Amino acid sequence: MAIPKIVILTGAGISAESGLSTFRAQNGLWEGYDVNDVATYEGYSRDPIGVHKFYNMLRNKLQDPKVRPNAAHYALAELEQKLGSDNVLIVTQNVDNLHEQAGSKNIIHMHGELLKVRNEQTGQIIDCYNDIDYNQNRLLRPHIVWFGEVPLQMDEIYDALEQADLFISIGTSGNVYPAAGFVKIANQVSAKTVELNLEPSLGQSLFQTKIYGPASKIVPEFITTLI
Ligand code: OAD
View 1 (cartoon, helix red, strand yellow):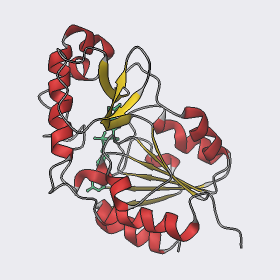
View 2 (cartoon, helix red, strand yellow; view 1 turned 180 degrees about the horizontal axis):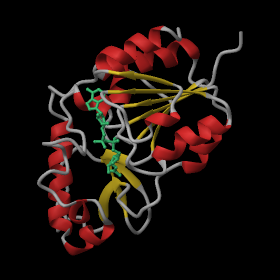
View 3 (cartoon, rainbow, N blue to C red; view 1 turned 45 degrees about the vertical axis):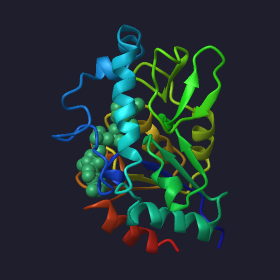
View 4 (cartoon, rainbow, N blue to C red; view 1 turned 135 degrees about the vertical axis):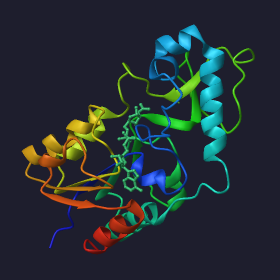
């Protein structure tokens, strides 16, 4: 039997049990912050020092030794190891590096990465593990896709979706497009579609299979059925 081509979309819910806040929950990441201030280019133009302070805080939190991949991240890494990187692609909306830490290799960070910054003039992307001081580095912005900006590597993502046999969506509320629309493309190409989330997402009716519960439990259980 041919090895299936699998595209896995992940969102903040997969990292919740690793100690990182989701966006839209009570006490979530946006609570206490106005998205227009910290997640738009206009907000950055108004107050670059304040916006860097926000991402410096998130970057520090991500590097807290207590923030580690959980069983869901490890299960996806094992799936790639067993089926091969050509057959398993993770498209993540997350800006953390927990998939990498767990051992996954074939990953697209469509919303950017917290541990990188970008030179606004040259476009150069640079690893960044420390606080950015805007007064010292006026050209470096967080390598984060803000609202109103185009997500990264979309052509590669659509190519993969069009070839997919199985599309799995994990830990995402289905609020943010284009990611929320990927399931429709998967359905158009007759891929199997699976939602693994704590609760039904906005797009839940578009999935053939739905399993609800904490990612650290339901993701390894589901992945076991594939390997
Ligand atoms: P959300 O915060 O919108 O949704 C997180 C989802 O994870 C919710 O549906 C929760 O029910 C679910 N969840 C929470 N804990 C979970 C657990 N332990 N196991 C499984 N599921 C759990 O986050 P996203 O959908 O990722 O964009 O948000 C999408 C984008 O909105 C983010 O990438 C970010 C934000 O604006 C940018 O920053 C560009």
